[in-house]
Amino acid sequence: MDKLSLGTLGQHLQTLRLAQGWSLSQLAAAAGIAKSNLSRLEQGNGNPTLDTIWRLAVQLKVPFGTLVAPIAVPLGEDGVEVRLLDQGKDHPQVDAYWMRCAPHTTRHAESHTPGARESLTLISGTLEAGPEGATKRLSAGDTLTFAADRPHLYRTRDTWATLLLSVVYHEETTS
Image 1 (cartoon, rainbow, N blue to C red):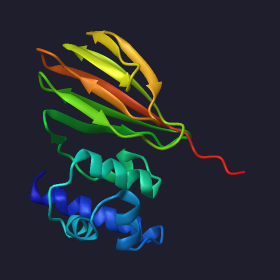
Image 2 (image 1 turned 90 degrees about the horizontal axis):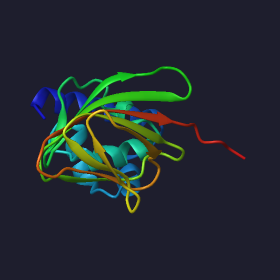
Image 3 (image 1 turned 60 degrees about the vertical axis):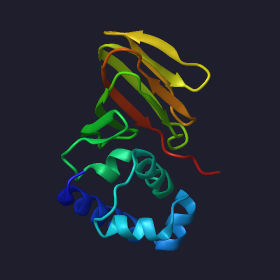
Image 4 (image 1 turned 180 degrees about the vertical axis):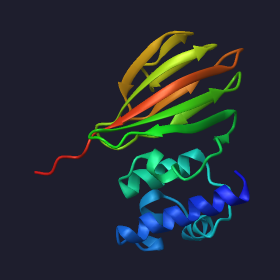
């Protein structure tokens, strides 16, 4: 991620954290990252992984897209690139992403917020995707929908895979 995008992400993260009344220490502990790493990230330094950004979004109880919305460049690591295409404003909130995975890539994704569901349509290549232990093999044109509030994965073999992905976030109910 370029310096401008890192700075934008850091400022937005800090704004969301403060709006929810979290201290650096509280959010870092809840997300399972070092306080110093969170501080560097908020200052526009460091090199956050996709998992770190997801964990922060989950702890802040905001969709991943809300956290990365101000960033125009694709986020990526280890053969995976993700770009937010659009973010719905209705309830439930729906985020749309473009995603590309290099050959011989396995991307383990952590659980999203409770009730979240993903739908993906494979544009090109082949892909194995879905909840860990219950993945499906997809070819171009195939669509898969699954519960994303548990660990899931994306795995390619010999070819690149390009897909459109939507995440539907359901609000938590209080009792």
